[in-house]
Image 1 (spheres, rainbow, N blue to C red):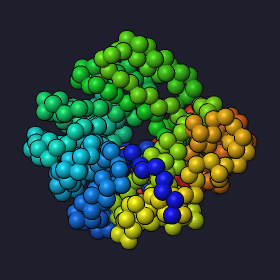
Image 2 (tube, rainbow, N blue to C red):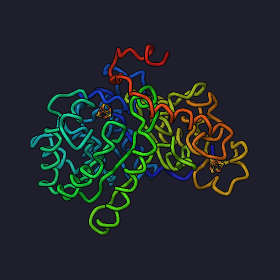
Image 3 (spheres, helix red, strand yellow):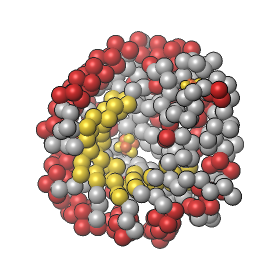
Image 4 (cartoon, rainbow, N blue to C red):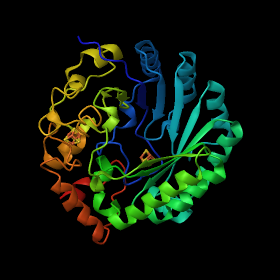
Length: 368
Ligand code: SF4
Ligand code: SF4
């Protein structure tokens, strides 16, 4: 067993249940049903093990983590173990009573995802009438409770023109941080790429708006910005490198180095039902497979950036080339880079209908 540096962050996908149906959801196409979820005792054990392993931050996510009635109990355990806790939520289930329970349990931070800056577009993307209004009310409650708040806006061709309004929303809420995150094309996002990818011109206008706002709001509000890989010259350091910083647990307890890793074939993902987090992190073959630089092919192997971006994203390499061990096609040095430019041409064509994220969606028809 090789002892790796401990993970900084643990993301718990408590459930895949969610009242919304966003067509870019990062959950896998094969959503897990509620009956297979870990029970409360198992999640508490995971939290205890994470603290012992040296994890500093814990993210409660899903699906919609507030669909789990035991969430306050889990937050309380994280606080007792000295972990900084973040709730990643659609916020449509957040009200004065549920927030009070979470704040009382010791929750540190709330990240609310917004589908748009205006109700009609937001409710259409989430396929949930009245959702936007509930999110606004929830964000006000979080501010009033004195918890740290991040507003997360997921951006695509249907709302990218309203990025300035999204930034203004963040200012109006007095958020310390907002995220303008272009859709990442994995899972449901990849399935719906032709419906969601913005044009290069729209992305450039968005980038200019973000950079100008960052200048204007320096010292007041941080704006995190994520661009689509399809217009990049260099890949992002996906998850800070495979199994270097992050550990993800699926609703049924499978441990993954990122939420999309289940799309990769040929892996035997270890479960927290059978293994400790320490054994998984330090000893599992799946976590070791792409850790570090030894696995890299050329051009990564002899590239100066190999310990900066770690060769990009393994899931994207697999999704676009069929081989997870190739250089991420987002890199302009990749022999597969032309795939990205070809896919980006989809954005110039009329957008097809979304396939909404739900169990039983007609995924096969969209893929053919
Ligand atoms: S992206 Fe949308 S559908 Fe997916 S978990 Fe978040 S709110 Fe729910
Ligand atoms: S060749 Fe590999 S290491 Fe170099 S920039 Fe591209 S993806 Fe990163």
